[in-house]
Length: 196
Image (cartoon, rainbow, N blue to C red; front, side):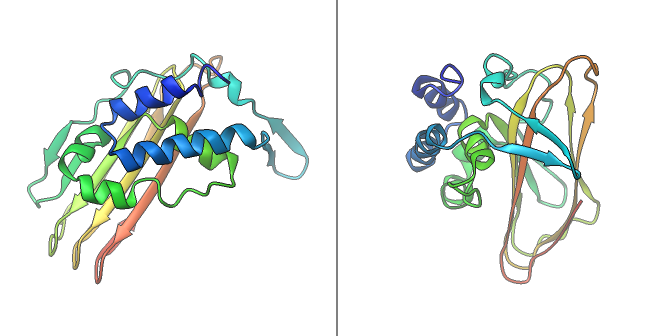
């Protein structure tokens, strides 16, 4: 776990995403908290338990470029902006500073793992009074590497859209992968979002 959660590795992830200083500090605080929390036991159904070791992630994370075809920056005809997190931190620093990873709890190890290891994701920005007439589809393919990603959807006042989030697995059943995705939604006054 130390190799995955080293200070150098978390700083590298912060730099890759062009995080603001406050966002990088939140990542470091999550790393420190994570090292203090015990590994959770996941319970599926009534009596099937699986213990997950966070050290299993060492060396299994996918590089940013691998298996990730999202455009760096795209403006749809409706005016909706879709971009990767690195671009979002450059072009929307105030929104990212205030809202990125703010819903994750610091007393939950799964949330802390996500806060520390997030290395990719999507930012969707709906300007005021923009109404996307067609559904916005966010789709990623999972191939062979584990990954931790975040989706932040930010709708200004009186904006509306339907957003579909999908993941397609192309991985071999013989190769287990770990995927953690969070979706954070910020909707200003009278914004209407439908997310599936």
